[in-house]
Image (cartoon, rainbow, N blue to C red):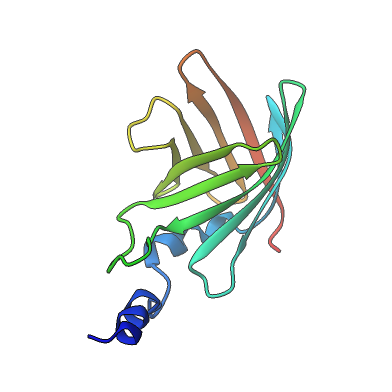
Length: 154
């Protein structure tokens, strides 16, 4: 196989976005966050529909937390297939890079810190109309609860 053919295989895009990832479409829009953290988050699809982008602007424990998260299947250079999990990386304005795994089962959203089964996770429940998400972040020795209400579908 020629080097050009090898590179073409490395960069061959998937034909269409993953149906499991598309289930996260219910997050798209701007959400007002209340509870122990307050502020706003916004989700939007990156062109092509393979990645969901989250913009975060929250205040928690008196500190401002801003950043951006990219959510999707990880497909590393040279891999033939994307990851089994829906993964993400959050980049904060304070220099943090945090990895998560997203799972959506019915109306329950779980976001694992780093790996499935981690002691650090978010678990929330969507309201029947999908316009509210209530849940808690939990980690050893701490956590906080929030309620998000969609204010626009963007």
